[in-house]
Length: 175
Length: 302
Image 1 (cartoon, rainbow over the protein chains, first blue to last red):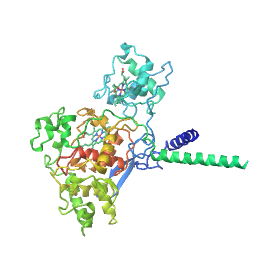
Image 2: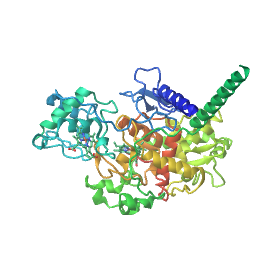
Image 3: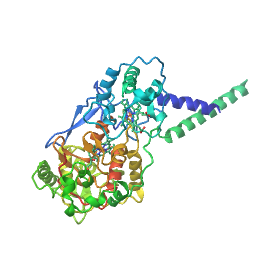
Image 4: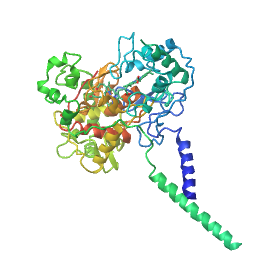
């Protein structure tokens, strides 16, 4: 038994130590503040140039076979009422491609270019769904639907607790 | 005393040995880290006609000489043509891809002055004719499966020349080589050996969720064919590779691996280097889905 337990501990430690590391074949500049690189093709050159990407993507798992980091499993959100969310701020986050970008998949009122992947997010004002339910869907919908295409915004650290509260208030305000 | 001491040492050694052995085994066979998968995986057929079971658009684009131009004029319907109407010979006008082709020819002729470059690429008696249709392939010299651009980089390096995978000049040479297979169908055999293994890994990777938004390639390219994503209609993954490297105004010349980097970056996934094993596996998978489809270069895509 003892070696197994010890082995388990050693492996966990090794795993944790690696968790911060992206794989060796990622397009990364380790010394830059924003480490993710995007390629720039230079005409009549045998070298590929690189520029910093607008966002650092190194914290999340890649497709590399060398990537030993696990994707976080579905997580129950730790939601505490009261909601204290601002629907106007929530709407901004929902429309912002760099933050929620809910508009890419959901049809939301007042947008001329609705996405066609998701579904209508309407009628929550009348439906009487709990804030905790809506919060959980944004935090990690995999708990409700393991095969969802909707990103687990909370579990992956894409949106903060306050941002999810604002979005919940916004969704709950939709007629 | 001594006996106890010895026994303790022995016990420690045994534990230590077991521990080392256990860690060794665990490292060697460390289970793959947890990933969400986009399931179920469709029953892809490693031939272009497999699209009949996926998007069912194959009848609209299988025969390039009989494309239905009424669909092309309809923004709701033109995705069914798989956008091949963008590619020559339907676009006869001169574009950046033609200049790249000239550059590729000049580079190739310099590299191949003594015939060593062609030999390294694996061109047999037929020369460059048909060479493109047999990539990716298992390479004895590299000890792994490699795409044409990776092999160009390798064979240029053997002569002391730098043609980095993904660079303009590398893609230009690739384009020139592909032009000798113009109209010839892609033909890679993924039914056995290292290519089969790469195909299977590529198929898995295509359905593996990753990155900031936890998307898989298939989240868009298999589940949402015909849907609008970021203002573009998603087309079937069948028949994708035969017009690569492709001329794009933003990238000038874009190899397939650079296209994967672009899709990764667009969906919040840290991209990998061109020539990485994961991209090569995806390339094998996508190339198998183009089996039987003719090479068409130089092509232009928006």
